[in-house]
Image (cartoon, rainbow, N blue to C red):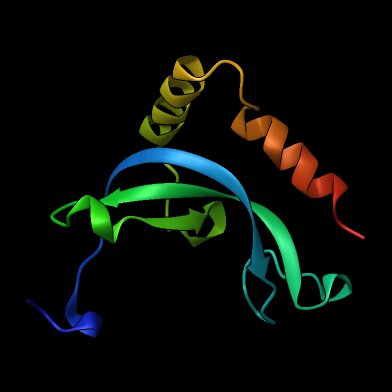
Length: 100
């Protein structure tokens, strides 16, 4: 198994999404000094290519080097399979409304 710094992580699939409270680091994409140390953001559960599901992580959109149309398609499939839950766009609006 490669060391942590030698691992290559490539997105295989977006499998879920959720609004999470995340740390608001200076210099991080999406940083806002008015928010203090925490903010809410929609994060996407990523299945990494070549890694088991137990290695899935939730990542904010800002951490993706590129956002591919296939990710939007995968999110739409999740939304269609769960019509009673808020869409990713609705959660993004809710996260925005929670900002001070």
